Image 1 (cartoon, one colour):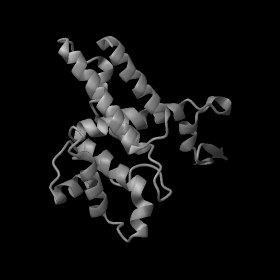
Image 2: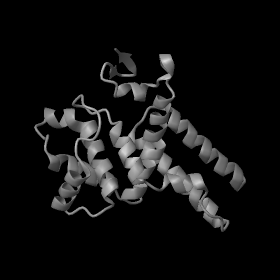
Image 3: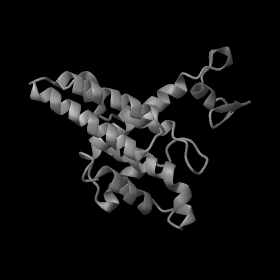
Length: 192
């Protein structure tokens, strides 16, 4: 198989993974395929494509957009911790990474693991910090920014974009309805 066909197979596999239910394993697979695509491009002396570069970066804007739309296990929406609170937790356990990467990871762990933490009496900032640290500094993950960027751009961002495309009466979408005081959203349904 020639290299261009192989690269297309990798792109097709990434697309197929993004259509399946979200999981950490699938996000890691997407990162591995994206890394392979970048390496193949470099072999030819080529630069990363714009999309590959985007998959490897994670910005303040990405962190804020993601955190703003987190649907937390405790029933709340949005970040549990501010950037300042997240930074204080990072400093207390000796984590040194981009503050927005840490903010997103710490809030993600709270959002996804609050119920389990409570079940086992672990609902403490240190518990979520240890989960975020393990996620970001995984030896196979390529480093904190690459890991969070791959997960965000490969798993979270497509789901947020899909949610934004859901049309409702009068031209409003589900995300703009979310903050309306007379509406409550529950699992993709709007109740006014």
